[in-house]
Amino acid sequence: MNLIPTKGDFSLGALTAVIAGHLRFCRPDRVKSWPYNPLQRLTYLFVIFVLFPLIIWTGLAMSPAFVSSVPAAVILLGGQQSARTIHFFVSLVLLLFLLIHVAMICLVGFRNRMRAMIMGHVVTRKEHS
Image (cartoon, rainbow, N blue to C red; front, side, top):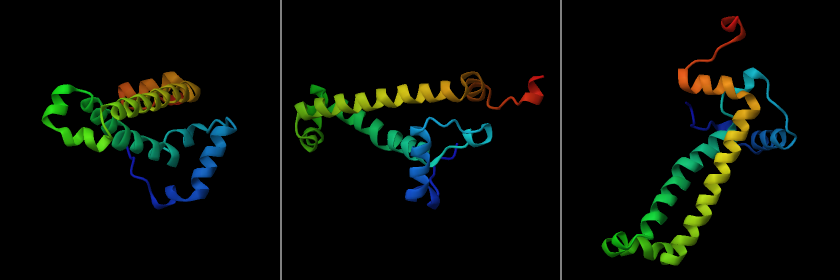
């Protein structure tokens, strides 16, 4: 799994081409659908390194035991009510990510993608017949 973006992934042209393709509901061909596109790479990195740590931090900031032992963690968020609000909105973004993720897997071929995730290889038409 290669999530490290290349220099070309940060170009405005690469990102707008991918977003325009998604907005036009264009299905990529089988070869282009397997490697991660720039938007997928940046989204996965954002979810892994921003949203997941933020959901954990805000969740801990709502815990009275954590607040009493590490009050600075709650102060940085602006208090427990701010932590609740941030936690709620980050949860919504993660839910939206999950729904879009599952919808895209169904769109590009659910059975083959699930088989690839579980078994670790892709079954081509030659192997299938």
